[in-house]
Figure 1: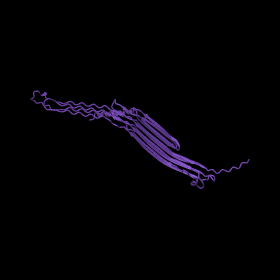
Figure 2: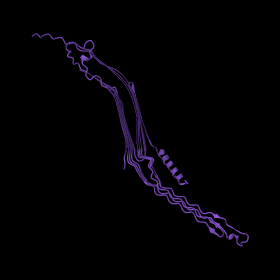
Figure 3: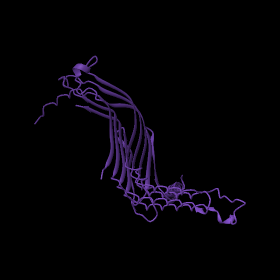
Figure 4: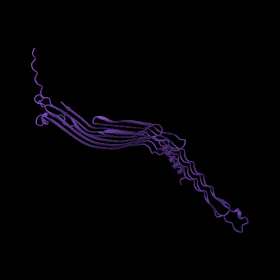
Length: 228
Length: 127
């Protein structure tokens, strides 16, 4: 038994790791002042569609054949046309067995993560102080549309159709002349139509499990500032 | 006993707390759907259909605060369709969310079977 699995994972990262280590030597203004400006802008859009399908299977029985038509009756005398043949019976329906259908989507967005670490390693702490300023400006627009579907249904196991019965034969040209003493004794009869066949018995359907799952995680505008 | 004079403390640096100017907008639309229903056999014959289940998880964390946290599962046994729709919206000013569950009704399934039955009956008269 086969298992159908649909899986998709989306990971979007928009990280802004600001100066890992900023010393007074590098960031100082006129003295040992430290200023860090972080500006982050992000637009994230995800459209995810996942599907798993074991369905729409068909195991129908075969259809019965049609019966043949009867022969015609013609000529003088009493003749009877042949009967039509019977239609064949439809076969039994088959057996449909499906496995599981699993569909999973995972979407993770990590947007505008700012980690600022300011380390005063200038050796100037004992001489004069320095101002430390950290400015963070984060703007984010995130949109997710996720559709997940799993399907093991809509299976069909019907029996076949019975065949049609054949048509009876025709009676053609019953002659009756004026000089015959018994004109009514000469006649042709049409045959009977055949019987239609019986439809087949339906089959069986056994399906597995269907599971659809979606996981969406958004972590937006995370700001960490450390000053030592 | 006379204590020596305390030396003056070195000037302390002024640390300005992080200035935060943050705007965020997060929109989530999640739809999960599973189906084991709608199989058709002739009258009296056997249909075994598995379990139909769905799960949706949506988490949104803004500025270090979890503002949307949804974890919802639904299961239907036998023969069924299940739909789970989760919508959420979060911004710097607040968050909203909604969860809608739809399971196949007997009317829907009956309609499906009637549709198949009618097509089957018509097929008997096809020439």
